Every structure is written in structure tokens, then in C-alpha cells.
Image (cartoon, rainbow, N blue to C red; front, side, top):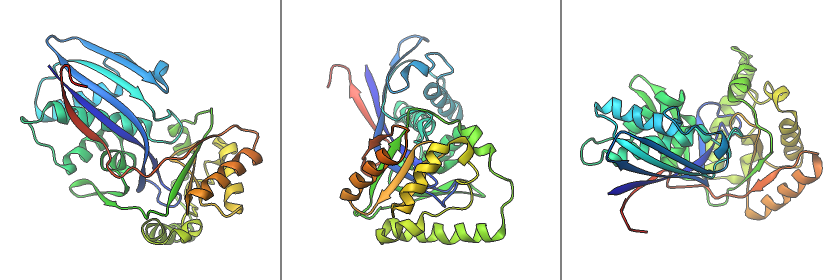
Length: 306
């Protein structure tokens, strides 16, 4: 009997001005081992961060993602044993739901290998159908910095390589924030000057992340979503403002409440982490990941192998 082994990175979406468009893969991972079993039973084991909150039945998001792929391919889902080890913090703006969706999509791809072929566009389409938008699932699937958009033929993405001088820092609080709540606080319309501001900063951010890290502070300024969401996460907003006033390119990670700091060198990450510990009463867990360049990976493991 063979198992499918999947590893999917955490992601940070928006990156300041790139609302619902830009995403970055980070080297914090969810890992999954999926093994077909000879009957219709479903067994789910979960360990790691947020394990107590995760469903062990057919409502499990990884399992639902596998089922979605099989239904799209017109195939019947076999009995499965799923063992998940979660490293991506849940409910903190680091793409935990996108990681679960991507993991399930890739697990199904591995299970169906040799029977059904999925190209990158198909993987992104299937993941977006479940997640609702492609900004988190694109970097989870493909790694690096991704630009995601939806065209006439469905969701698409462009992967870019991040300049080696960019050093991410993620500051993670103990509390969570609902993505639904955060999105509900944004207005349906914004002033024209704010829209133009974000267009310019999003364009600049691509240059800063791929060529000129010294421009990151200006490039991560935003007027579309972070100020509106401040009331849902005042500690996050205060920390972002304090870091930016000190010259650090700090933004809300995804829907929050974690803070992403895009530093222009590893040493600056330590300075930013020290500042975070000094300026707020909220404890922040400082994580210093690399940019993940591979995205989700799939391996086949034969029974008895390591």
C-alpha cells in the first residue's frame, strides 16, 4: 500500500496594498499523509497547532478538498486514512484554510496520478472554488511571490522570485480574528485617490520585493483595507503603526491579527522583534521564516519506507 505525502507552506496575503491579489509563501508548513484503505471508512488524525479545533469527520476541510477534486474528475473517493501535522497557526492571517485546501487538492492529485492529469491552472481553479479567492491558495500551491487574478477563463497566477535581501518576520499573537469579520468592516466603495494610491504602491511593491528591498517601506503603504479593519484588531494596528514609524515595512498579514514585517536584511528582523516586545502589552511570538520557493510538494511513499 502506498501513501501520498504532502507539504504545504503558510502564506501571507495582501502584503499591504495588494489586497486580494498578492501573496507570499513562507517556510512554516502543514504536512499530510493520505493512505487509501480497502473499505469506505474515513480515519483522520491531527496533531500540531489548532489540532483540538479540527473536525475528524467528513466536514474536515482537507477531506472536503479531496472529495471536490474527485467529483470534478468524475471518480469515486476511496476509503482514506488521513494523518495531518499542522504547523501553520490557525485564525491568525497566515493562510491556514488555504493551506488545508491546497493540501487536500495536492493529495487528490497524488492519489489520481496516472489516471487524471491536473495542470497548474486546474489546481488553482479547484482550490479557488473551495477557498473563494486565489490570493492565499496560489502561493500555497506554487510558492514564492504570486500575483493572482481572475480572468474570463478563471483564476490565474504569476509566480515571481523574491530578492534574496528580503527577510520576513511574522509576529503572531495568542488571539485570533475572524476573516469574515475583518472583511465585513471594509466599505464597498473607496475614494478615487485611495484607489490610485494603492495601484501605485502595489506596482512599487513588485519592484521592491523582486529588485529593490530598500523601497519596501514606501511600497507597503495601504489605504484600502488596514485602517478600516483596525477596530477588530487594535493591538495589531498599534504594532503596525509603531513599526512603520520606526522604519520597518510592517503590514497586517492577511486578515490578521498577525503582523508581517518585510525586512531588508536578517539583522533588521531582530531589531523589529525587539521593538514589538517593547511597544505593546500583547505578547507576540516572533517567527523568522524564509520565503518558500517550492510551494506545495507531493511524494509517493511505499508501505514500510521512511
